[in-house]
Length: 315
Length: 119
Picture (cartoon, each protein chain N blue to C red):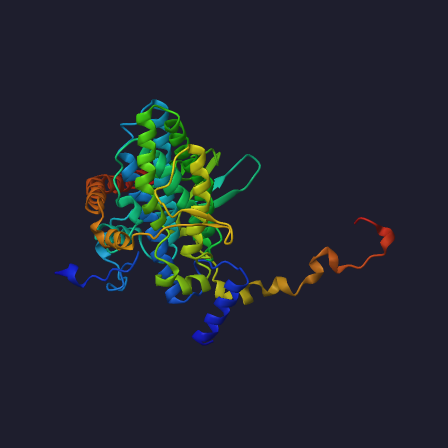
């Protein structure tokens, strides 16, 4: 069989909604795109723990602290599901970590913004996790089996994240004037970066066409972004707060909300590493990795020692 | 100097490096384990994913933290991935051929008079 035949069989499978599994033949670009997307997704979960970690010791009550700890632990778990899904494509864990730490691999730019107040924990849960969920629900049906299965597990756990975030804001929105102001301020700061999470406009997106053909993605950036805006524009009313966009308006004809222009210069700037916290986040990851080195080595030595001990006992 | 030649695609990586792995780091990597979980008494253990651990006891503890945070399991099996031998999907045709041409193994192969009712 020629490569073209393999490609044809591969595309037929995709068209017939048959999942691609690790040992199946796949085009190199499909493998590469999946490795890039899954590892980037895993890095986002891992780096995403940092802005929230900042508030674990500062949470306003023991209840909130326990909830935040559980959420951060979920994120570590999500990172691990995704790393192992990427590994089925032939990249090693160490290679991925190295790509993250050297800046070759990206993670979601949203985590390069600072978390200034407690209300940010609410805004992150509601807006950032809300945006992520729309993407993740779509990815539950992605064509690569291990990725889809990891996403199903993640989606099951993610909805608690968004609900607790909304609840944090709901409590603040019914609080003192200062608490209300804090709530509104967090929404103002996280709204636009959340919209940027869906990536460049469809007309500017480099990876979209093939990803759609291969059913890695099933909805375009703009489509997902519009879904998100329509959802949040309604939910913000329950909080009695507003979104910081004077052009946000229901369009009866389109049956969608119209919205203002995103600051794309800011978007590209943060992607290129010049966001408010890019440096800090990467340094925190590097430090954690280096400080964990002796633990990883000691565990290997201990496993080796234990194995030898059992071997001599048997002999 | 290297920063000047970096390409910045949105979320892109490793285009320049070509994805070659640095072999010295892989030596220190904890081995990979496949995790199987029995979700409740009476059901089979089912493959749920994989993780890295230095040895089997650690693999079980990690599996508890990674795959059973919400009581998804009551029993865990861990197997080091290198001990799993998998069939090759490219040979599926030959491998399953003996089953394909024995349709008489299925109950629907037999046409019985309607009076027999449920059999």
